Each structure stands twice: as structure tokens, then as C-alpha cells.
Length: 166
Image (tube, rainbow, N blue to C red; front, side):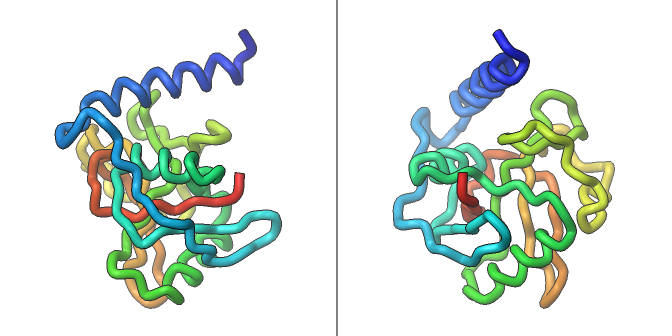
């Protein structure tokens, strides 16, 4: 088995195990609704939906719509995504990304590429006292021009999915 395929199998195994622990239900309740196109940058298109979900449900929503949960590569991309999200005036200012630290606490990676998340992205995870149970990465729109990536519990279902083209 190739390294990439083995990694995908491990991620799916861990994801399946974590999904089984969701307290509210044994089944995922991915948001419904057509993805809303937010904008385009380079070869990426960004989407969301006016519905709330856990991190697992957000992944499922993106997958069901042939999209990926977003991974933000640069500070410029973080600023762009924040600016297009602000234009929609969402009810909530929290959005799920594909970031997680399931394999090594504090070493956050993107789901699709398994690359470490650049901690320079807006002082990512600056608070080292966060609980170990905070394993999934949210994007928060904090003020008119500040976008923050931070870790939080994956079962928080008060967050909007944020997807990009696969």
C-alpha cells in the first residue's frame, strides 16, 4: 500500500471512530442546501451554506457537493477568504476548515494534503493553554479586517461549513 493510500485509510478510520462518539446522534446530519459561491481566486472557488454543522458534518457536506473542506495556504488567501465572507453578512462569524491535529496534539495539518498548517497565518493557535480536546480548526472573523484560525472541539455544531473546489 502506498504511503498516501495508507494515510487516507488511517484518516478515514480515525474520522469514523470520532463520528461514532458524537453525543447528539449516531448519524451525521450534514447541512442541506445548495452551496453558495462566495468568490474565486486562482484555480480555487470558495463556497459556504447558510447552515450550521460540526466539523465532521462540514466535511460530509463538502464531500456530498463534490467539494473539499477549505485549506488556507497563505496569509493572502486568509485575507481574501475573510473579505469574501464579510460581504455576505452571515449570521455567525465562525467557519470550519479542514485543519485538524488528530495524529499529534498541537501539530495541525490540512485534511486533503496532510501538510502542516503554517503557524504564521495570523498567529495561528497563539494560546498554548487550549484543551487537548480542541482538535479541529475554525476560521473566525473577529473584526472588520482580522481573520483568525484557531482550534476548537470538533463536535461544536454552531459553525458554518467552508468548502473549496476539489
